[in-house]
Length: 368
Ligand code: SF4
Ligand code: SF4
Image (tube, rainbow, N blue to C red; front, side):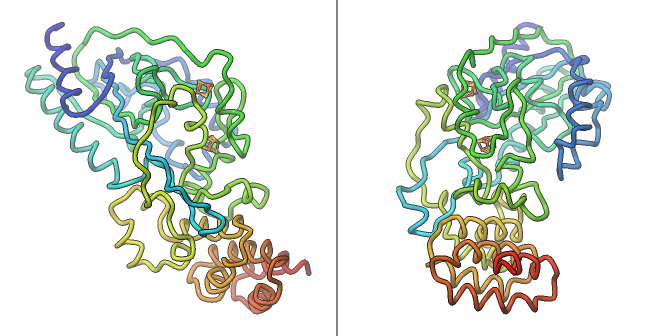
């Protein structure tokens, strides 16, 4: 089986996967930790994390034929954003992983080919590939297989790749010799904790997703907590700051890409056909048009730039989603000090909005 194992790993590398490593499936012993994590409410709106809990911790409970797991990095380019002053230019920022075509499609195709190659190498053995949509505790399995270690920011990273990478897995119905985990190289470093603008990274390799900008801008469905809105800074989809701060990513670079800094005034008032045309095949569909517009409204307020007022006033007056109108009202309240008259007029009109959440935000913004 050693020769087949080597060929399996080489086949993964030929498909673009990096550091493919093997772990033997079995209980992780993390049940109590994960249950406490869920009981603490850290899943927030990520209700899918409440499902298939046993399978996340031991995939054999859902895939009883599986014996081994191959886990691997699928790196993405971490291009720097264009050199623009976001407050002046009214530009937001999206996380670098979301650039280009949705990774699920590309990775899914490659993992499918990898699984079929494995089945060809091991006649009668089943194999199945998974991206992050499956109920598999993928960082845990990547650490067990030795793909990398789990950093203090709770992402998987390695000395040679860093952390700018997706994870993919293939379950295999055969016993393959496992690899050894790699040592934790975080040491005394705390750069990711220091860099996080919302304090989402807690001591002890623990993340509070409900404070994380990636969660708030992508997964969180409702109103963004007022106390965290300013901390969003320029981010309209995800956040790269803890990865940018990590010394193991210091060599990562790519060409600047304009798409990382979308025009906020266009984004906040984008209609559905415009959204589909521009972002329909990207990972931004996970957030969808309304949440992206909500985020753009907040970031327009964070610019502190009165040039944002006309786009916010239009969103407050015309947007079909109350969620967006409410956040536009909050941002207009922030900008009121800079250019009082137009913000004031838009907010007074919003006191007659059919939705109470919008009226409430307008009252707060007007301090009445
Ligand atoms: S993605 Fe941003 S908000 Fe989330 S933990 Fe990292 S630095 Fe903090
Ligand atoms: S920034 Fe430092 S503590 Fe955080 S993941 Fe990287 S090495 Fe670990």
